[in-house]
Length: 187
Image 1 (cartoon, rainbow, N blue to C red):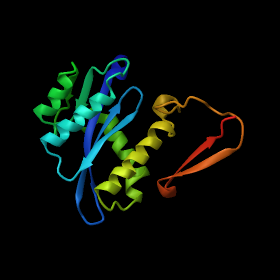
Image 2 (cartoon, rainbow, N blue to C red):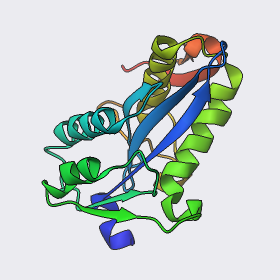
Image 3 (cartoon, rainbow, N blue to C red):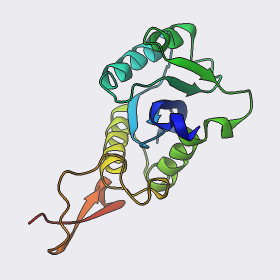
């Protein structure tokens, strides 16, 4: 699998309960090789048309990905319909559904969901869909550009162009101070 890691994309849905007891569904895609996460969207009613449109939008984002994506790993959730799979198959991406009741088969997506819950969602009361969308975008931006990963030798998924090794260490509050991003000013 390590040979194909840069060509693997994994996706999964997870749910978030709002302050007013509404269940919202979040769809995320993760590039297995780089650990870069793409937030597809959130909705209270994830039907076939919504999931298919999110798949199209993610494919537009990944259009120039090098090397090209060849495989999509997804579970057998009923929200992943034939139309959803067709979006990927039309780009010559093989869709690999995981066996039933085996969350470890989609371990990268499941592990990211656990990180998102522990580092962010379990510490906030989500008010509504717009609030969840803003929180997820902020968290994913932090995750992709500032959070080091053990699987990447403590590097970040989207490397910064300039790295300052001297100067004072600065702190930036993310999500109102739930997460702190430490960095050095560039010279």
